[in-house]
Length: 114
Ligand code: AMP
Image 1 (cartoon, helix red, strand yellow):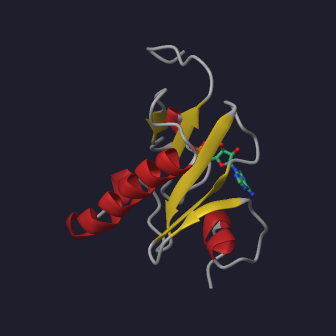
Image 2 (cartoon, protein in one colour):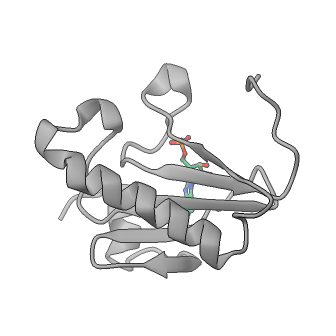
């Protein structure tokens, strides 16, 4: 068993507020939200980041995006709009090295990000 934080959440070894689950994807609320709605969507299988993904991981990447869409639908975010963020590597702000999509909504989100 690896000690990756998000793998441990997937295995229910660490508590999280889960909002969506499929056979391949888990979504839970970020513990330090930066928007009124801030959910993380992760693949259950460990992939460190998009930059580490293999060509054969296309289905997994698609499932994570579909998971983000379903989270947005179930939380009623689709009409107003929401932002999906995927940080890749330290300079981009990635701090947990298990691929995840941030689903952000509930406030005005500036572009470009600071
Ligand atoms: P990133 O900086 O893109 O790697 O995003 C990692 C996110 O994980 C951050 O927004 C953290 O607030 C969040 N996070 C860290 N630990 C936990 C946890 N135990 N449960 C939920 N979210 C967490």
